[in-house]
Image 1 (cartoon, protein in one colour):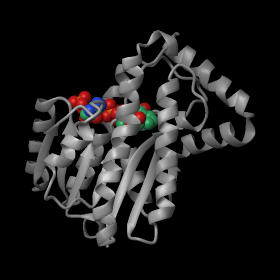
Image 2: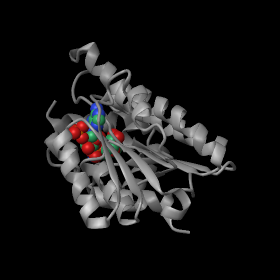
Image 3: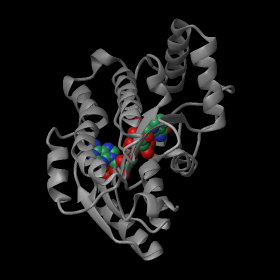
Image 4: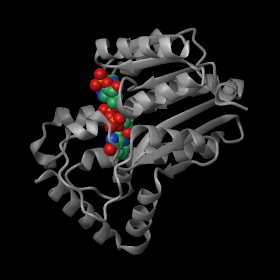
Length: 265
Ligand SMILES: NC(=O)c1ccc[n+]([C@@H]2O[C@H](COP(=O)([O-])OP(=O)(O)OC[C@H]3O[C@@H](n4cnc5c(N)ncnc54)[C@H](OP(=O)(O)O)[C@@H]3O)[C@@H](O)[C@H]2O)c1
């Protein structure tokens, strides 16, 4: 069965105009799946959607929305009323890099909404129809940063742990009801967002930075097969070392030391 037969004909991607979200959009479009695409910046989103329509002959709907807004999920659900969505990808993520106490409360709150509360609300709103039909898939983007405390991106790391645990829990609840849930735990990936953080030279033992296309190809292959997975062989090995070989204290310290070096904190 193709991905379109299994989860089509229409997918909703939150955070879809570039980076990993752009790669989801392109790969699903190339499978013939129509798309509802969400991002904050209208122009790049509409240009990208038009390009997907021309290249793959699919239909697209663009929604300009800030997923950090407390009522974003309500507004999105209003706009997609009447559409049957069986595949939902929550891609957008938000973070600061630096000292927790130096960031205003609003920064932490926006991260919590973008990474945690808006996806929670959308999953809660979209899942009942999928369960009623016994057909659906939900992908939440998680991160290696959420596997242990990750200093200087503390709020981000905590929200990514939330995404992973939510997806894994729902995977079990819905696995015999036709709805596949997956947490995609990525490591460093060369999206514009990651490159804009201007990361310094990585340690020579650090896993190679993946491309968004690599992450998405692997994720779509794992969908329906597992509750969560780590993208890329090198990330899997690094994660095994961090979780199984090092003590928790040492793993957190390693993450902190690496972030200090990478971002010259
Ligand atoms: N890149 C990495 O190294 C890495 C590593 C591990 C995990 N991840 C996870 O992978 C996911 C994707 O990361 P990414 O690096 O591709 O960048 P991203 O900034 O999370 O996603 C880029 C896309 O999301 C949209 N977006 C971002 N914030 C939004 C908001 N508040 N409201 C609406 N749309 C928003 C962007 O368009 P607009 O800017 O126009 O809104 C763009 O289309 C995230 O959840 C991230 O935590 C990434």
